[in-house]
Amino acid sequence: MPEYIGKCTSCPRNCGAERFGEYGKGYCKMGALPKISRAAPHMWEEPCISGKNGSGTIFFTGCVLSCVFCQNYSISSENKGKVITVDELIGHIKRLEDMGVHNINLVSPTPYIESIIEAFTKYRPSVPVVYNTGGYEKAETLRLLEGIVDIYLPDLKYISPEKSRKYSLAENYSEYACEAIKEMVRQTGSPEFFEDGMMKKGTIVRHLILPSNTKNSIEVIRYLDRTFGDKILVSLMGQYVPEGRAKEFPEINRTITAREYEKVLDVLGQTSLDGFAQELDSAMSKYIPDFSLEGL
Image 1 (spheres, rainbow, N blue to C red):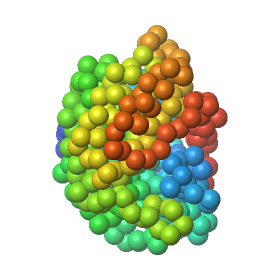
Image 2 (image 1 turned 60 degrees about the horizontal axis):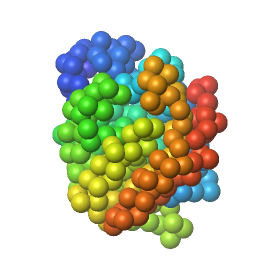
Image 3 (image 1 turned 45 degrees about the vertical axis):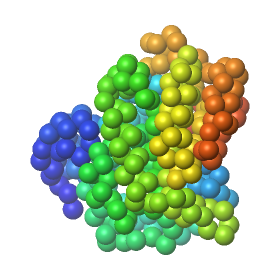
Image 4 (image 1 turned 90 degrees about the vertical axis):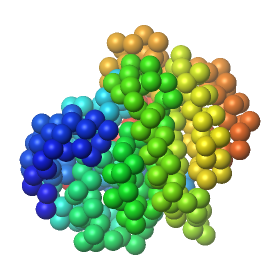
């Protein structure tokens, strides 16, 4: 069980910080033991992830990014959650599996790679394992997960270093995220599905359209098309609502307009990419999970 991690370099921050059982000195401020804020079925992922019974989501506290508009701000930046042991993590996985969920969905798991590897080495669920991430990952860290993760669900938020620096304090975001997605696709191959339409393996790349930033979204879509084509699915998200510190940035302190959405959707329709597109009526705070330690 990880009680101490010295000189942590799991994520692109490479902060080299010491991390102890329940606390850490690194960028993410997380300790060596898992800290989670929710472990319950979730119905609002992509259709091939949520299905009828829901995705067995385990929301981890802490994040390696600092997105000013974060929809999960209370757990990514305010550190809401409960520290658990690896065996307790396994217990949550088994409980969700017994509830009939279609997969075990690890949300923002990057600070806890060591615990995740230990948990899934001890216990392998009968449903696929989903690694749900903001995309700011090191390919060499992801290689440690080969054979554990069945489905990767990363964001590709930006191509522009200027945008990623401004909104996520990570100028090198696209450099790492693009290489990380290549590693994910290498591990999973092209998308595969069970007979009921639920995803068995593969990579779905999400992109959230930000207001006043359609150029960035179009760059992301064109990159994914020329780099991956039919080897991935794309999930285009119109659900943006200003959360976190978005009010400090007037250009993103609103939902996206129908014109912005349609402009990006038109470009997606001109590509070879397959996947999903959310409707604008999903841009409501009610779709953000309530991080009241449900299931803990």
